[in-house]
Length: 279
Ligand code: SF4
Ligand code: SF4
Image (cartoon, rainbow, N blue to C red; front, side, top):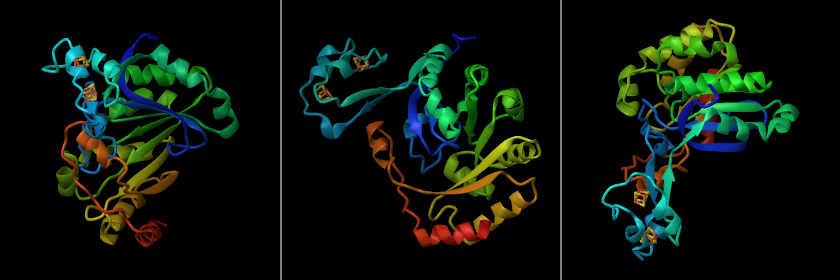
């Protein structure tokens, strides 16, 4: 249905990192993992959130004055964001219909065609809002647009089967091989994730496996060897990417009132060494 709704937190045009060519990436709100290194912590809660940039605030009090609840509670009416002279308040997460998102996506169709790009559905975990995702994918395919689904894979396998006919590419995260460690750093074990990946790789779908490299979590040679060993036991993915941790999302934790866990950035030499193991 064209009026099916989902809560999204961003629609980013001109993306080059979420699949081939020039893409529009649609970010769904809500995730069933809690990765300690997440660079989009505002994606984790499925509900809208107030983002407050303390360093911009001058304490003028306009937000409290205009808020119907004097900031004692929030129903995301948006008044405080409109009246704040410093743009120190922002609501993250908004309900969109399929029609609205399709309208945004179609604006860049000529760029997708000329670059071999398309649309990527990401998050958060886009496979937690399946009705909307399925409808979006269908509509994109009806319009001849390449589709990619970026997932952490912690969902029933039937979800993948439901969207097979309309998905050209899966971007599939493998965060670490040891299930205990996986649970420690993401909140869930990895049995379902790896089992889904194995089944997915046995199909004829295009799959890029993406491994974020997080120092002190999964940057050891042994860890990458174990992932390689697992992948070698499956039908090979079309691509395996190692993505170095970056600290660009760290400031967002304070903005949504969460504690941040910091990690170091892996060196170029380390990334090269780990890439060599996989190749
Ligand atoms: S969004 Fe509305 S309800 Fe929420 S704090 Fe701002 S003014 Fe108050
Ligand atoms: S209106 Fe903006 S600058 Fe003024 S107190 Fe509220 S958040 Fe701070």
